[in-house]
Image 1 (cartoon, helix red, strand yellow):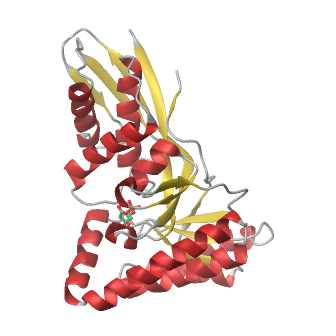
Image 2 (cartoon, helix red, strand yellow; image 1 turned 90 degrees about the horizontal axis):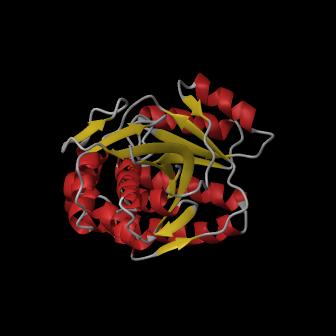
Length: 306
Ligand code: PMV
C-alpha cells in the first residue's frame, strides 16, 4: 500500500492567551510531544479513520475533505491512522496538530507541493469551521515549530531565535474547554468593555517586552512578565484554584515566574526556572497535586516521517 506518515508538534502558550483573540500578539512555543498521522491508499473507495486515542475524528474528516477539494485529489479510498502520546488531555493542541499533520500527509501522498503559509491557511480554516473561535496560534506552532511571535490569523507570524527555554510544565489533571472559556471572556468583555480591553492592551505590551527578553535570555525579566500575565488572566477570571496552588508552589520553589498556559480553567501551568531549582519545583508542583510533564520547547514543526 502506498502510504505516508507525517508528524506535527504540540504547543504551549508562553504569553498572551485570550488577548491574542482580540488582536494582540502572543508568544507560543512548539513542544516535542508529537502527533502522528499515517495515510494510505486502499482501493476500497472508502475513507476509514482509526484514532485510538481520540473519540473526536471531526478534524481529520474535515481536513481530508478540505485537502481533497483544494488539491482536486482523486483517490480510490484512504485509510488514516492517528497516533498521539498526548491526545487531547494536556491541552497541547492536539486538534491543531492532527489537522496540520493530516493535510500535510495527504499533500505528500498525492505529490502536492504546499508551502508552510498555505498549509497554515488551510488548517486554520478547518479549525475555524469546527471550533468557530480561535486565533490560530496552535496551528502556527504545529506548522512552523520553534517559538513564534504571532497575531490572530497569522497576520504576524515571526519565528524568534532563542538559545534555551528552561520551562517546567505542570498538568492540573483537569481538562479545560477552550471554546467555552473563550466565550466566557467574550461575555465579560460585553459587560465590562473598557476594563477587559485595558487588560488586553496591557497583555499585548507585555508580550512585546517578553519577545525581547526571551531573545536576550533574560529569564528574570521573562519570569516577571509571566507573573504579570498571570495577574491579568486571573482578572479575566480564567484561572482556577488548582492552577493557583500549582503556580504558587512553583514560585515558592524559586521559579523566576509562573502562569497558566492556554485557555485556563485547567490543562497546564508553566514555570520558568534555573537548573538548580527544577527538582525542588517539580516536587512542589507534585505536592500541590499536579503532574510534571517532561517536554522540550522549541520543537520542529510538521515533518514527513516516512
Ligand atoms: O486552550 P488552548 O491551549 O488551545 O489555548 C487557547 C488560547 C486562547 O488564546 C484562549 C484561544 C486562542 O485560540 O488563541
